[in-house]
Structure formats: C-alpha cells, structure tokens
Image (tube, rainbow, N blue to C red):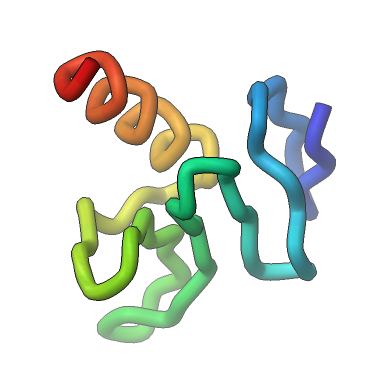
Amino acid sequence: MIRNKTQDTDADDWQRAGPYEFVHVTGWTITNRIVNGKSVWALQLGRRTEGNFSSPQGAMARHSALVQDSG
C-alpha cells in the first residue's frame, strides 16, 4: 500500500520516489504538477505523457490499461 497525502493506494510495482512522484519498474513515472493553477498527477514515459489525473490512482489505472493493451 502506498501512502499518499490524503489516501492510500494498493498498487503493484509502484514505488514512491518522493512526496510528489511514483516510479514503476517499467520506467513509467507519475508526478504531481500544477497545471492551470490546479494540482494534477501526470503519467509519463520519457517525453510521452498520458494525461493528467486528479489522483495517483487514476494514473495507475491508465497505466494498467496501457500495459494490457500492449501485452
């Protein structure tokens, strides 16, 4: 279970790398950013960005969908 500021997350293979970042063994990252004055969680692999999410759990769910689609 990964502890977030406001919620806990069950997420296999995701590790907290700092207060605003998670990393996955596949090289993907989830980072907290401010976009247009709002806090969002961005899912990224290098320069590829797969959206901005309101929580790390949303980004983790998108990552799972991407991995399933490619596998």
